[in-house]
Image (cartoon, rainbow, N blue to C red):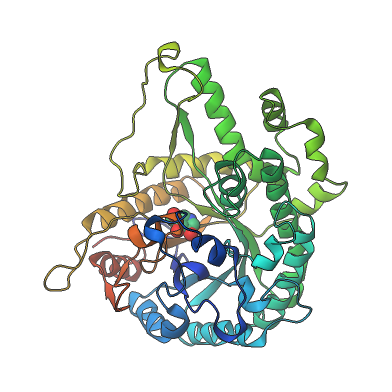
Length: 455
Ligand code: IFM
């Protein structure tokens, strides 16, 4: 069956997201997203970069589809910019030029035999919705259901693979506890948990809308998951590691697949006085039933593992560190492919998941073109190769993974890092907007031609 290749119908793809590549920040009636606002606040983004132009994919998309075709991918994961469809979020009817943009893109992908995987929310929500409270407000659920209804009604005849949200953890934790993402709040656990809940609830509520509009389609959600390991055997590190795992992984997987929240998390945060039990009043009767509705697939974004040290304990009171990270990418993220295998085996064991796609996996390296315009990004090739090997091991051991999407098709706006971190298989010159396929592009092309076998 698998031998040294992947299953026959395995989907090899690549991925991007709207704010990271499109630019055209106010074209054809588009409203402002929270990322338009945030990236223009001084000091929030490295080098004060912003996504006003990014890769100008909104205008250069025919070129990009040609590159996708050349790469030979079977699937392409892209996201829809919500404020292109509902500029403020509050309109009753959608902005048709916004829908037309995605409609022509999808037609073109299909003409080239590339299956579009659509993510509805890859973080760039309309600023108008943030202004009335954003994700901590339950009103967001109806706004998302309306948006997913109109998008699937217009594109659902052709799009058959839907992802409701990308990485709810990043919206909830980075936006409300860490403070790095919009709206940039710090240590606000009540809002962070309400955000997670409303994202999950809106996922559950939109499943039927999408399925009704898009016959024979599959609807899933993408989570960024990671295994974690305590830095030492101290009870501090072990306890902190458990907390980390619960808030990154179980907070999302448990309600989706077990219709319950991990009580441990709420108890832990209450004990630390970070929430009051009454803050959890956003969970209404019936919500968990809705969230736990059958999801057709789980999208897994994997980059690294986490080594956890309890930072609240003085170093001289803790045990010496025993686990240290190995080699890192230019982002400073440890390269640990075996963790992908471990993660997949664990989620297969703990949750009744019938289908998985690796919706993102990749690395930041900034190797520039040489004098012959060749980009020899051998570390990126090694990163993908080692992760794909572990993915194959996981499939052999029974993990129902049906596809792999390399992040990313091209260098793009890497959120708070601006244009300084490059994840692409294609180099983008952000001055001239020229695209140059890297060596990893040709390596991936050949891997796809050989269905996962390296030549
Ligand atoms: O670029 C991001 C993407 O938007 C979401 N997942 C992680 C990637 C790398 O940081």
